[in-house]
Length: 468
Image 1 (cartoon, rainbow, N blue to C red):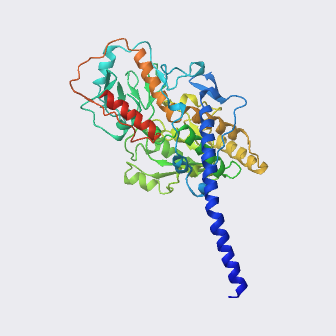
Image 2: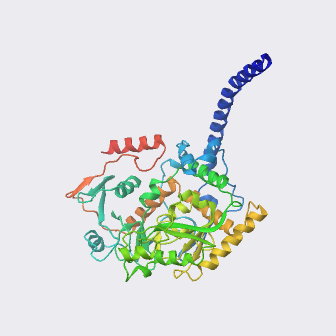
Image 3: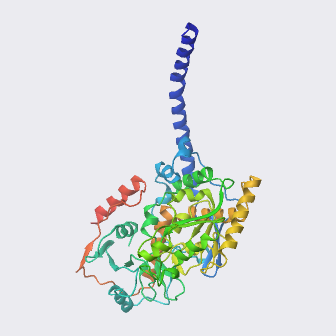
C-alpha cells in the first residue's frame, strides 16, 4: 500500500471517529426535542377534534375542519421494524391526559355513548341476581359470568371466579357483573365484550382484554399512525382485498358434512376462489373440522402479519365466534376496512359508521365483489396520480384512524369502561349487599397487562396500597 493511500485511510478513520459520536448525540437530542413536541401535540388529539352525527345505530365521527395531520419524528430504523414495536419503544410521558378527572365520565358529543349499551329502563335487583346465577347450557361460545362488588372504594370478586388473563385485563381497567365470553347476553344486565344490538335489552359493553393489552398512550398512538403512513403509503398497495383467519362461527362449535357450508367463513373462502383477481382471502387453520371438511378445503393459505395487511388496497373483516375482536386493532390502520354487516358490536363499533369510517358489505356476500372492485379501482387511481390525499377509500381510512387515535388510546379505553360503570350505577337504585361471604378482594396493582407510563403505574399501585 502506498504512503499516500495510508495517509488517506488514517485521515478517513479520524474523520469518522470525530464525526460519528457527535452525530449520534445530535440525533438523540433532536429525538428528545421532537418527542417533547409530539407529547404536547398528542394532548390536543382528543374528542374536541371530532364532530359527531347520529346515524341510526351508528355515529358518523369525522375530524373538524383545520385538524392538523399526524406527523412526528421516527428513528431511522423504522423501515425495518414493526410500527407497533417502534411505538411501544417510545417512552410515554405522564401527561395531563392521564391526570384524575374531577367529575364522572360523560357521553361524547350528540350524546354518543363512549361504550355501546342498550337497556330498557332501570336494572332491577331481581334481574341482577338472575344474571349472577345464570348458566349457559345452550350457548356454544358463552362463558361463566363473574360477579364483582365495590365496597368502600375496594374491588371484590367472587371466590368462584376461575381467574384468567381475560379477567386480569378487565380488573386492571376498573370493575359488577362481567361476562368473559362471546355470544348474545340480551335480557341479562351484564357487562360483556360484545352485545347483539338488535335487542332492546342487549346489555352493556366493555373493552376486551386484547384491546387493553395492545393499547398505546396518546404519544405512542401518534408515533404508530406516523409510522404506518410512511411505511405503507396509499400509492404503494397491492390491488387486492386481504383476509386470513380460522374456521370459527357464531352458530357452530364444530364442522362436518351437514353444516360446514353454512359457516360464514367457509362460505367466504369458497367465494374467494372465484374472485382471486380481487380477493386474497384464505382460511389458514381448519379448527374443529372433521376429515370430510378438511378434504374439501385443501387450498388453505398462510398467516400474514397483521401489520402487513396495510400492503393491500383494503382489509376484509368478518365475524367469528361472534363479534370480530380484531376489528379493535384494524381501526388503527391507514387502510380502508371492508366489513361484513353484523348485529354483534364491541364497545366502540357504533362510532365507526358505514360510508364514513368503514365500507360495509352484506352478510350473504352478494355485494362483496362489487365493493371490493370499487375500492381497488380507487386505490389504483390514487397510485397512478401519486395522490397523497387519495379518493373515497383514503377518506374513509382517514376518518377511521382519526377517530381511533382520539378515542381509543389508553385513556380513551379506560374512560369507555368508566362510562359503562357509571351508566350501570345510574340505572341501579338498589343497595349492594355489604356481605363479603364468598368474595375476595382484588389485588390493586398496576399494570401487568397494558404498558402504561411507569409513574402512573406506581401511583395507582401506591393508591391501592393505601386503601388496602
